[in-house]
Length: 209
Image (cartoon, rainbow, N blue to C red; front, side):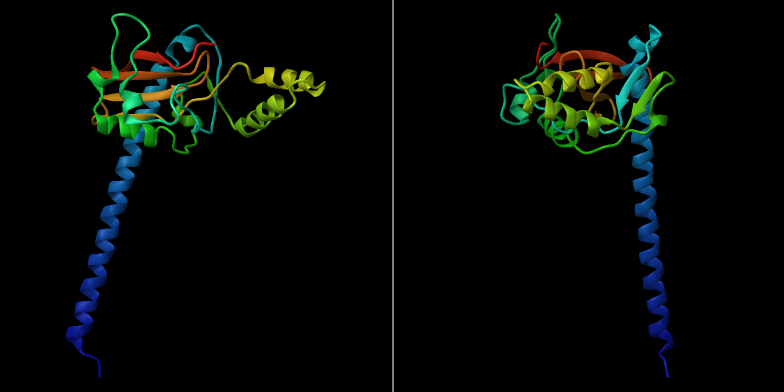
């Protein structure tokens, strides 16, 4: 014969576990939704200039994971905080971001991420051809000095207008956002939330091309 007190305790235990799972799911959903909504708002600022000129922007769906600071072996707190803006008056990363921020940029800014079309404003097209582009780039450099390089170069030129960007990193409770953009000289773009809207704060170019 079963013990009714034991059965009751088991039911309560199961209910508590279910409630904890629901709370966790709701918190996770809330965080994801906040980040996705901020990405949507951020992309309006990221591509405001091009779209304002009536240009079509093409972005690879796969975020850039392999970006680095060229003069460093790896992304480090010290390296990140040593960066500064391109134009005067200079803005130093160390005056805006903390060591915790720098760690987060190196960690989350190089995570795998896939952009969705609805994260971008009208006029921005999301392309799933980054894998093909990466393969062509690798083949191109392996074929340097051979006749095949000419054909590969022609294939690569089809992607000259495409942009590769990293997963945006939001810092200091969504006060700042930073992302790596490889087009027109690899650089880190920093955006700041002002009046509830993302605006470009400064750019730090990592390599001139």
